[in-house]
Length: 80
Image (cartoon, rainbow, N blue to C red; front, side, top):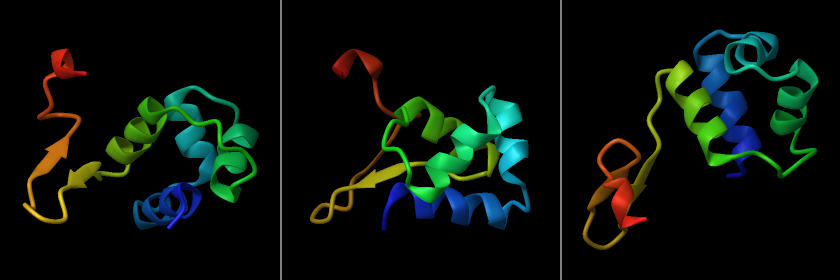
């Protein structure tokens, strides 16, 4: 699944408009619209994380073998 489809899905589950998200994270609504429509690939991870948080979602990375889960909240930033 592409990130644009994920953004649209989590936004609609929260019953928010594109304009609502754009205003909250401080970008132009047409920029957010472009992200959702897949018109640009230029979206920072930090913005994706902000949108997820606004929509009450958390970004998880799960190891497909060990099932270990890493999130931006439980990772030590010094490891990066």
